[in-house]
Structures are given as structure tokens and as C-alpha cells.
Length: 475
Image 1 (tube, rainbow, N blue to C red):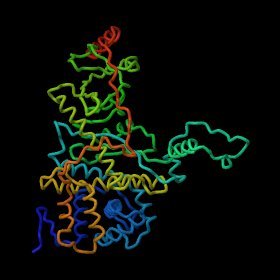
Image 2: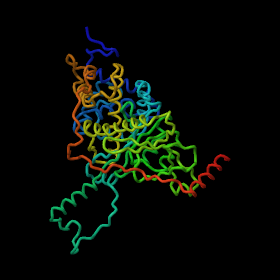
Image 3: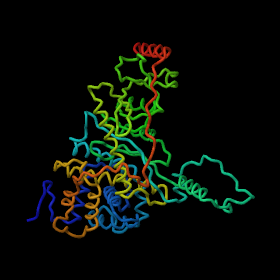
Image 4: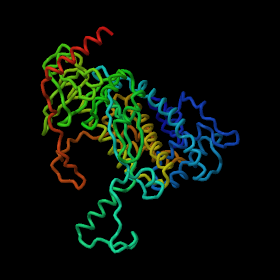
């Protein structure tokens, strides 16, 4: 008799049947009515979406090889939703055309799955906590990628001496000059900037935006605020600061915990509200001149491992969130750094492979969607066995799904079904030594943010704040 687990999955199923059940669970209830493919198109919207996910999951090194591996599985599992033969160029042209509506539909269903299947981990301390951060992905140096994703040139071009053309200019001879030229060339290389909103309780992405290198993280976050739940609390590092940015977050009804440094000026004893010992105000001159209200915030100082953290939060009541809880929320934010490491290294997306700008964005979106969907399915499967997502081994999860894809024609060997592999896709309990003192080649030695500049409000500021408060109360 074949073994059958608590979800009804049988170990006698073929790998293809297991992959079909995974995709069916992910896409159950999805609304694809807005996807209006042509009547003569041999792909269905559901088939195209399934193919895009499998294309992202494939472990092949080249994009065309991923497509070939995916197409064989799609034709076997859903023959009515995919053509019997298709070229990679035709598939990618169709996928680029429909990525935005397909992505919107898939994001909605994955968010619903997170809230429903992992409901006990969706809220912490009474909030749905999200981390926000950005990262760069390398790109091939092609004219198309350089035209859209390279940084803007800010320095003037100097004409070579002796009337030589640019192609005939002498190469620098000294070692220092060659190193400087190589560094500048690397700085000009095309890179994709991706800013992600990441759910801290579940450890999975929620939303993201892409742009050229040097894009504004704060601008990306503001564009994604509407996608957050109304009870969201955003935890960010010191790059996400500013009166306008924080005002937009508060106006949307969301709360925040953000680390600040010496580039932030805070006021105390302004008298705008009833104050406590840690009440501070953010009220830059440009906001005061426009008669905009000061931001009333709470400053929490936490002693980190090496340096103190200065955390600003919009949750002013300590009974709602204590100082220890504020510190723990900011600690949870560091998980987004681990997610980026897994996305770039474990999932092998540190450098995308597409040679044209449109294909780059398509590859980036489906890579993020593919990893999100795969980890969400694995997380809910382990959650039913009372295993938290933090114990999930992303490398082992990738091996499990890719084994099922690679062996889709066969039945699994004993103990090698997708579900049995997921049962073992856990981190061990071995406590590793602290490695922070090791000098890794890519280790960053950035100077930590210093304390914010805090000063008492002047008499003119107090008077102006009083007038503004009175006019607000009358209005």
C-alpha cells in the first residue's frame, strides 16, 4: 500500500503529478479574465502562467535550456493549454506582452494564500510587519541594457591629447591608473535595481519594483504603499528617512520603525502635543514655512552588538509597543538581507542573463515570482506540520522542486518524492560560531550611522507650533 500523507499526497504519484498538484494549489481561484489572448493563440492564459513559473523554477544555466525543460513538462501536464511546439523567441515575446497583468493576478492570489494558509504568522505584536530594502542585480553589457540600466554620466567627456580619437587614446600605463580605469568601467556597467517589500513574519516577498541602478528606494516604497495591508508596520534602515517620506507613510495609515543617523535633525520640547521623555519632532524649515504640521514621533535607543541603534517610530504609546518590542521589530528587518542573499546566490540571480532591456525586466519579475511561489508552497506544507518558516532550508527546497522537474517522466524512488524531500528540507540545529570577525573579500566596512542631532525648540518655533495647533483645532 502506498504511503499517503496528511494532505492526501501519495508517494506513488509520479513527479509530474506532484508538480501538477503544486501549480494547481498556487493558481486555485486566480482570476485571469483580464488576459485577452488572441483567438488563434495556442497558449491559454493559465498555461502561459504555469509555463512562466516552471521556467523560473528550472535549474538550467541558460534561459533557452530552462525554456526547453519547462516546455516538455507543460506539454505533458497541460496539453490543451500549450502548443505542441513553440520557439523560445515566441514564448518570450508573448510573456513580455502579458507579464504585467499576469503578475498582478498572481501577486493577488499569493498574498491571499499567505494570509489564509499562514494566518498565525501574518501578525506580530498586533501588526503585519514588513521590511523594505533595495539591491542590485548584474546584467550583461549590451547596448540595450546599457541604454536603460546604466547610471547617468555626470562627468564631462575630455578630448584625448594630440588630437587622437577616442579609439586611439593611449591606455594608462601605471598600475594605479589601470585600476582606476577598471573601477570606473565597472561603475558604469548596467545593473538592475530592485526594491522589495518583504513580510518579516513569514519571510517572503510581498511586492517589488525594478528600475535602473541608482533608483530611489524611497520613491519605490511610496509607489508600493497602497499594496500593504492597512495594519502594516514598515521597518527600514537609515536610507529611508525624510519628512516627506514619513508623512506619506502616516497619511496612508501605516506605521513605521526606521533607524536614523546623524543626518537627521530632531526637536524636543516643542509643546505641540503632550510630551513624554522620548517624544521628538521632525519639523524641517521647508515644512514650517509651508505651515505643515510637525511629525510627532518617539525615539528609542537600543544598544546593539557594537553600536547603539537610534530608532524612530510613529507608535508613540509604549503600552502599544514597548522599547524591547521596537528593538525586536527592527531585528526582524535584517531577514530581508538574508532573502536577497538567497535570491542572488542560492537561486542564482546575482546576474541576470537577458540581453535586451525588456527581457531583463521580464526575467527579474518572474524570478521573484517563481521563488515567492515555490517558497510559499513549501512554507504552508511545513506549517501544517507545525514547522516555522525560519527552519526551512531554501537550498533544500530548491533541490526538491528541481528534482521533481528534472525527473518528471519517472516515479520517485523510495523516500525521494517531492513531499518526502520537503519533509527533510530543514535547517539543522547545529549552532555555528560567530563569523563576523572574518575578513571576507566582499565584506562591507561601512561606518555605522551616528546619533541624530537633537536640539530644543526655539521660542519662535514654539510660538509657530502653538499657532499652527490652534488653527488646526479651529479647522
